[in-house]
Amino acid sequence: MRKSLLLAVAVFLLCGRAALAQKSSTSVLAATPPMGWNSWNYFGHNVDDKGVRAAADQMVATGMRDAGYIYVNIDDTWEGERDSSGVIHSNAKFPDMKALADYVHSKGLKIGIYSSPGPQTCAHFAGSYGHEEQDAKTFAEWGIDFLKYDLCGLRPIMLQQAPNDRAAQMRIMIAAYDKMNKALKATGRPIVYSLCEYGWDAVWEWAPSVGGNLWRTTGDVQPNWSSIYAIVNSQAGLEQYASAGHWNDPDMLEVGNGKLTLAENRSHFGMWAMLAAPLLAGNDLPNMTPEVKSVLTNRDVIALDQDTLGKQGVRMYSEGETDVWVRHLAGGALAVAVLNAGAERSLDHPFHLNLSKLGLHGTQKGRDLWTGKEVELTENEPLALEPHGMLLVRIASPK
Ligand code: GLA
Image 1 (cartoon, helix red, strand yellow):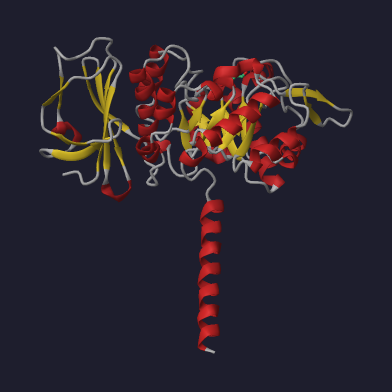
Image 2 (cartoon, rainbow, N blue to C red):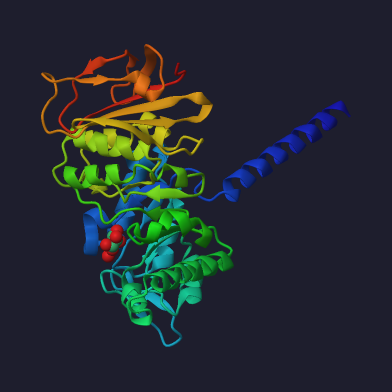
């Protein structure tokens, strides 16, 4: 009798917990910035079924999946023709999208796809214009979990329908994003909705109202320091728009692409984490170097990005070529990033960190997230940062 009562209580508690877990995981889509991989930055037009499967395999083999990278996103150039009923089909590079989605899901990952509110995508493939409900249904039937919706082909229509009327053009654009939002919702499948219109028309102000979980805040990132640094700076001031389910997206990661140095890869990744940015790797996963892997899978930096308080970092001050950012974290913790935009090693001309400008009083104990070492930051401490390098410290109990 007592045993069965205990069992009943245990079952009740377990079920309650499972129901709660289910609720919290489904109630806010993209509760923390989405993490995954996207085909565009490295593969561009050369993405195909084989490459996406290989990326999924590598996400498991490299430990990226277990570090939090969940979405495997196919960008532009997968699109084929519409059939006589208007249903979109993938092109010859993707023989069976449903089978591909099943494969990605079987690895414990999720799959994303790309389309445009215009008749054509940026790479001139078929967009969803006039087929929004149909495409959302097709995506849901394939098992798609994430949609990047890229303005491109709608622009000529906006200009044509509302010549010389910027406000009316904007209304057309917002309505088009909302149309796909409603079509996605109507499928009943949770699909993360990623708006890509390059940060025009203060997208951060209206994206949540059309269901955007993330929205691009800039033009396309390039795998070089000047592009990355320009993007970082353009994010200052957008912090008020980020919150659980709604993220500024300074574009996908170029970590491991181009000729970025280790310091640049770290600064890029570390600053995206300070910005609570989506972490969508964009490199050649099967040929990733151990160094690049160590950057992308740094658990401390990922934890910073995914901090549950959901507050984006703020640029506090700049001096010469050095910028100091802080990010408020759950439990009263604080992350401090000192970013050296200069190309010179600053050993001879160290930067003196001014803690009081960050609202901190005296020496702070923290953890250097790139070395993993416990450190102390003291007022006016001279810091010698690598060219384009960063110091990234998490202070558990700031004073
Ligand atoms: C635009 C987007 C990129 C990529 C390409 C694909 O340029 O900003 O991220 O999706 O289109 O054509």
